[in-house]
Image 1 (cartoon, rainbow, N blue to C red):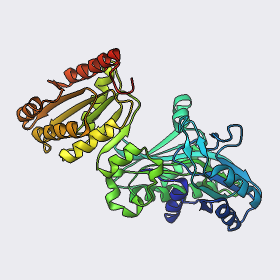
Image 2 (image 1 turned 90 degrees about the horizontal axis):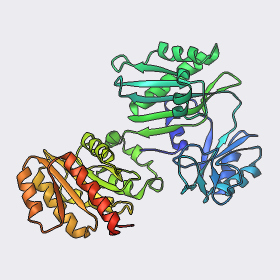
Image 3 (image 1 turned 90 degrees about the vertical axis):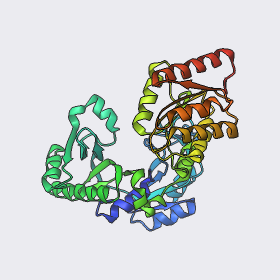
Length: 406
């Protein structure tokens, strides 16, 4: 789950992470009041959307104007900036051409910036440890730095048994070229950020840019925080920070129905139980010449109602030309899944080819239910067979012009 910059900074500030003073505003009048509460005379007005590249972005309503982050020097200019942003559609390289509507802005105090750095925390699957990444290339996307300047990325993997120590932060600080007071400030900053990451069950925390001020302080100029969805049951207060307007409607429906769904840009809808099996299913669809329209894991405790919701979400995507169901029955037995498939197919009047591969507990009973349903379900014996059949069904339907959206 992602949150806005202003929410991230408020949370991190509670853990001792140094952030600039600022206030969120939903209207130009509120933006003016926010500015009056800040020292000034320099203010920064920032569009709040779940996407990076805001400063370099452009508004659809004024494509030749300024971006979604503006530095101004008067309260009157704060109002003008807020009026130019609120209610407008900001297009960045992360939003795509559709852009995102700005519903609020963050009015923040100015900062005396001496250097811009990068700092990120994430769980590195290669080491199974929380890893701190730092770079002198602040303001750049870390993926771009990794591709063109990998030598400029510093890493520190933290042993979960012992936790973070001062030497982790100092090693990174020296690698970044920090000196004197800057090292102490950086050490405090990183230690506080690590504590927040751990206690809040974060998936990623990214400070880009992390700045060194003229006074030698280390400050988060921006903040991106994403939480582990599987841990949100421990943090009801964090769930309240979710902005439904920033989510794909299909993904929002999935969250409400306890489904793990991610929309993609392919043409074959996938319904699978288990994340690993879902990834393998997506890979084999690509292998046989097509592309997945989604990642969807119905989970090990799927029932008929959840299967129906999964089908409804998949078919709400106009790009879906066929559906592949790949189930390995365990706790969710094959006969129960088969009944859910039949019920969903009838209730939703599926109009695209449906290929089903079942394996595991009660598989023969599940196959029997599908065969006797009277529905045009294409059975598959194994994953390769299923992938070949669903890709062939898409190609055949496309050739005959019968697929949805064709």
